[in-house]
Length: 611
Image (cartoon, rainbow, N blue to C red; front, top):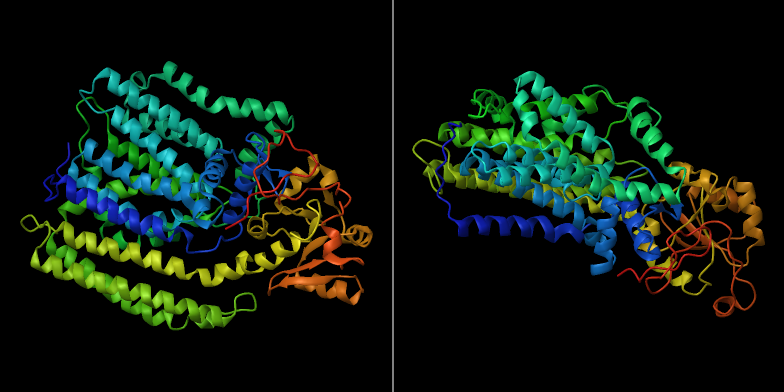
């Protein structure tokens, strides 16, 4: 089936140690960075609100109904908060787990489908590719979706192995159908449309009609709908407006129209993949050529053709979309890693020497370019931040350069796995570790920007003031949606004038917002207690108008103010119940609530204190 050498100088203990080393590097830094807007803050806050309210059916964001995506990741993050408390690493744990599991899955599949060498190298390629590594440490939906889609692909590949017992083949196909359902619960119809389209295209390209007899269609569909149906039924029962918005607006119009304002050229994802697989570019063409020559299995199934179809179709599908984000093509990363993993054991020491020497020079050139990072400074991100980040980038490049020199030395000595003239596993592992640590160190250093954009340094002062006020004190967000601050202060905000991505939630619960700043000013004047988050430019304008405000926290991007306390001050505030705001309610109590499953505009109990 595969001419890749299968002999590797590894026993189970060595493999376990490599997995443990990867786990340490993968999971330890999760809490070293603040949450970034918009995705990280949004999905962390949605999970916090789900955990606090106890409503596991209707997702909410800032206390507004939010049906843009299904709830699987929100469920996982809410459970993580329930088990481990609130924090950055907890918010990223599900993403990191799915990313790590994807590495193990592609390694297991490569070993079972081809041989041990392919499995080990495929896992190495995926773990150390910047695309998979960085997205595995960012709280967004695409890594979870990519894992479940990868499990769909891998389970299908494993189920089609020749001479497999029927019960085993059926079990793998049930895993395939169930993981496809979980992909739908992760991000919607792409979880089933993309694998289905790939299967049809593969059948036409490979003329493998017999495959359809081995899909266990009837029992598989039962498994699929048993997993995917309950939430859709329950959420529609409680929210009659759900189906139209979720399927028509978010699933079809999002793809077919530019209304999401995420444009990009057709070649948008080409540089994404070039940078995302930068460590392995010099062997990419050879990897595809080698994979294409692989024969079919005795049962007529062609796993390489299926993987190539998966890669090309999904790449073209998102390239044609009117809405593009860097992470959309992430599901094609695992099969790309598999194709490269099939070829790496064939690389000679001479080829690897040229590969490593070229990247050593690349790191030197990159370090020189990094010296000029402060020139990218702007009013929003001052040059001082870039200068601080430069130190992290230089440190990351230095570590990568040293490990690449180690890889060159190991390759020259033929240590740690060289078989004949073949490249050694030790050299490739050292080179992979160079890129893994490069991404980890530079990614951690990016927090010099994340600290400011998150607003987290303002949280202690805001929470201290909130503690002095009645629990139903309204907190307004004037003309802006701050994606991260609500999570850090444990409090939702009432939108004023600018609905942003909460427009749908506001349309079905219009009493939960204030449509104009003038209307908010009148409400502000009438409130006894109130807080507001305001952009600096708007704050300056309101000061000129003489609006009574007391600043309790501010940075270059936001000003948080409170209504000046009446006579009696904060001491009286704790004893007085402020009029319940008709709009969105705060989430600021000290224990998880036993709230009804469908909160309306009544005050929502608060979350446990943020550590």
